Amino acid sequence: MTEKKTAFMVDSGCEPTISFMKKYNLEFVGINILLDGQPYVDGEQLLQEQFYARVHGVKEFATRPPSQSDMIKKYLALKAKGYERVIDIHMSSKLSQVFDNSKAAKGFVPGLEIHVIDTRSVSAGGYFVAEKIIGMINQGRSIDDVNAALPEICQSVQVLLSASTLKYFVKNGRIGRAKGLVGSMLRLKPVLIIDDGLVTPFSTEKGMDKAIQRMADASLEFLSSRPHNVKIFKAYGSDNNKPYMDQAFDRLMSQLPMISISDYQVISGRGWPTVTCHSGPEVFALSVYGERRPI
Image (cartoon, rainbow, N blue to C red; front, side):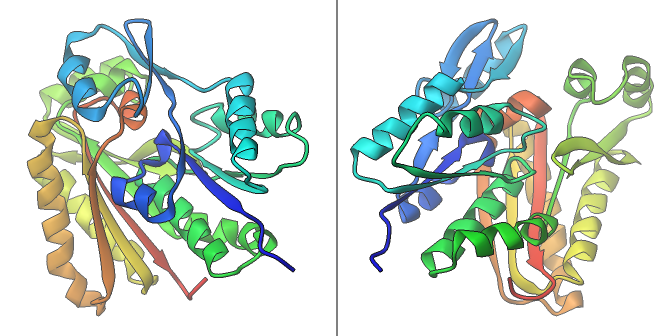
């Protein structure tokens, strides 16, 4: 039986790194970014540097998923290139309709085997899940194996983030306005987590130093029972948050010997505009992947 010519596709909400995209020759789906209502395709019409240079000067920023028609066109283009199968991997269906639109689109492209996968995460979490799935397929594992393992793969991810200001969390409804005002006066810093595909509160700490330590401690605790295939992803939005990201990462690194983990991969990057539109630009993240037993 001959191997099917397979295309792997990810969207910008999965925060793919340039090296990741080159390694697997990934096809790409850019989520639409709206800056004061003007649409741009993330990664195509709007690059990271352009976004961060402009985002503080706009009143409103938001995302809009590619339409069903957009996804049909992408699938047809892959079919025209001679692909027989597409593994299409997307950010959480609870944060974007790109997954639903892709599932609806695949029925309009006969003769092309299309598998649409919900990572149930975003940012580094989407990256971790996508990388694992692609690795499994390239190792000869079947799509049935991937689907059976998907819940455990998703549970092997923890994404934590915090911010230097509460205003964007108030603006997008993650934190109530009154709580945000009180939090700012008391110098409270939220730590948020991607839980079941949604950005939700994890803890509230008094001051940035404690928020950073909480992120490092929680990451260490998560990995303590997940010593296999460990990956650590550090990311930031605006430039002034990079030192906070580095501090959280360094504290985790200093504690890793406590749980006897010495074999791990480190990935670093800057938040894609798609992700930043959900959290605000004043954000940094520490994300970890670890398996209880090899998947």
